[in-house]
Length: 134
Image (cartoon, rainbow, N blue to C red; front, side, top):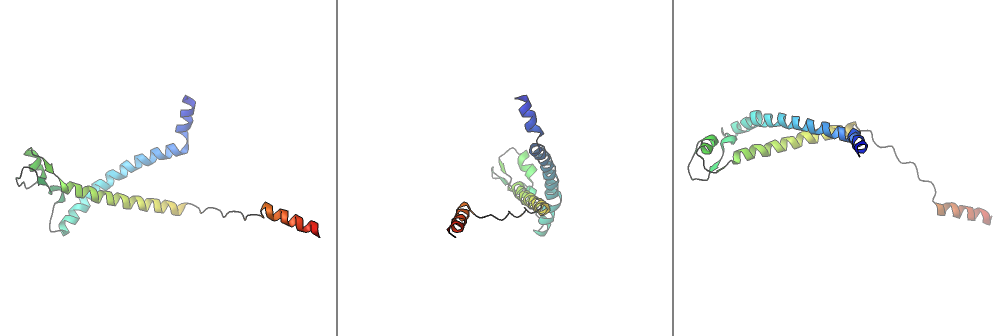
């Protein structure tokens, strides 16, 4: 069983999958930083100076200026601005992954054309029959 497990782990697919998972984690961190530090402030600027990170609804009915202040008050808070950031993050990750897969697919060689199919067994038998009739 240990030998089978070693063979399974050492196959190319598992190693490639492990590398892909590590790369996806790093890519996710880079994209998350891009969304939080570049994209959302840019979008907020053109949306009238909004800070999406501070958009929230305090369930205690009070009006807090920032999300941190609402959380510090101890009441339940719906942080829909953070959710909007997460949605933008998801869209950007999806776009980047699409571009990576698209570029990868362009590098793959097209499959070789299938060899032309020969005559079927029935065609060969019919040909033999016709030759015997002559």
